[in-house]
Length: 128
Picture 1 (cartoon, one colour):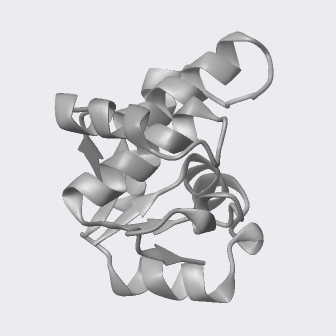
Picture 2: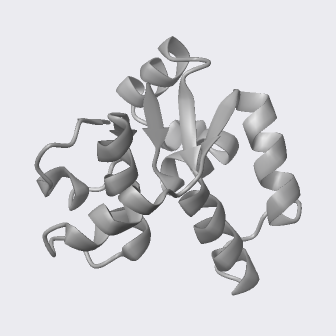
């Protein structure tokens, strides 16, 4: 089962050429077992509100359509993941990524990300 990093989700929906060959293969292989976190929804909506990300639809509609088109399952942010994110080593300053790391670890999901900083965290299964 795979958890998509926010950039992976954006590339899956808009520019799949940015995905690595291994990422594309894993997404195809794990159809029906692809997860996105509510954290990514918040990050995308926040960037859209600030004008840093242009979406063809309002964020809620965009996320709903992306989820339906790609068979994505949504994961809520749970208390144990939120607390675990705060306890992570300070290798990555981005709070969204720290939360995604904690969610992946808590749910024992493979995190699909190109982020080299995330690769430094122990006890995390990654793929790119």
